[in-house]
Length: 98
Image (tube, rainbow, N blue to C red; front, side, top):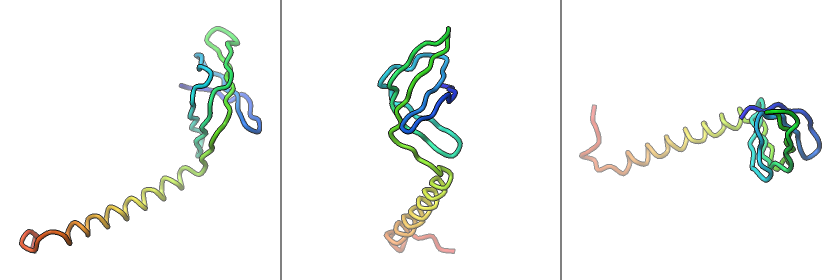
């Protein structure tokens, strides 16, 4: 659901949305190179099809691009290790020869 950031405080943010987000809903906000996780603590209609909801932030994951590259690198290394172990366990007669 699209939302517009309207206010930021030490432990929370306010968002403007087109529909109501129920109180106690878990939310994930993808912004630039970070992901914010939180819970809606209040929501009110300010105009037809316009709501303001307050979100108490629980976690912030920053530098997501760097984290994604690291995970891809680790998974690539693990995949290569699994491939070599698989080849080593095959009986000699089943190995392909040039």
